[in-house]
Length: 210
Image (cartoon, rainbow, N blue to C red):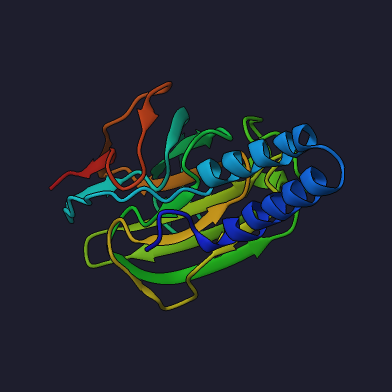
């Protein structure tokens, strides 16, 4: 996997070309603005190499960001039992690639068109464009929802129904500021708290209770 994901190349090369054209045809100082954007896009679309400690007894964070809410639910469309929902907000400065929280097979995949409200609003999980994956193995069923925000206008998925994912494996991204929701059954002990910073593929969101 490259240090910059392929979705970033059109933005990076576009800014580089625009900067070169403006610098040559107008003034070198004018080229500074597109080159600054080019550097930002290199930063935004980064894909840092991470060592994933795989453990089938834990649920890892699918994304970098901040835990903004932990909500108990009576049930869930996929989990189909009492569960907890952990909401992770990603700012435009966070790594935006998403990783599978567990090892398992994708047995649910749904994409919903919707609005583009700010990703920190309480209702964005219902109103905004979002993409849901249901992942399961012999021990657990969880769902992960990518939610577009006011700047995020495209949800990218690298996987499809029936694909097998390794824990920590990249499965998609959301462009420019967004959030994710992870729904886990009640037998998973929540290991994070509201306001905590998390790292995709590294921070343990929950631990399965035997």
